Image (cartoon, rainbow, N blue to C red; front, top):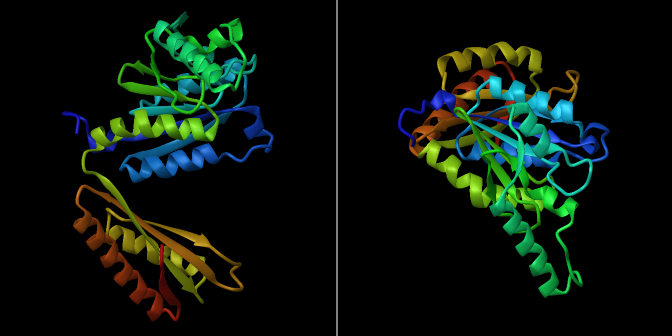
Length: 279
């Protein structure tokens, strides 16, 4: 783990860019995948923001996010060659930086198109303004190799905040994250890991269970409990999700096991039924 980095600072924010997300045309699977992946690496996702393909909205979202000083900001979408791909410019504006031609990024883009020609996917290529646009990065940025697609990922450091820009295409986003970002997150979280379990609860309304959950969480401050109703109050059925983060798997399991026993006994005493949900 990086020296001097407090566990309470291991916060990540996600910013998703795209009109298609705001109008409901595309389900935001990128945010879902990233949140789950980041959590599994022991970090905390504090916020997910969605903005459209608008330069002012993107730059404002970046400014606001940086002001909250998360350790990492992950931006997805808007890195391609078309006119509505504005993320690079938006991030640059939000940070008060200029866009500049990045030689390393340009080399990555050229090699990709050369590879497409060698595979017969395109007959020939030239570095048009639309293609070189993908290599115009905020000043001081570092390009990240895209193993799947054309547009490189981008890393910018603003003070103590690391900002990563990833393509919106899920396969490209996942590939760059796993190859370039996950190792960094693993390094900063050290041995920290996320552990979770779920309980199926019947015949007990959520409104009756809520104060009992509060009591259990006060007794077990390292375990978070979230209730998810599965039916109406007239047919009480809900799922309890228990989670904890620890740098020791045995400790994490003991915490969760203790809470499962405690809350199960309370539910049964109140006339409810409870059983573990197998993952």
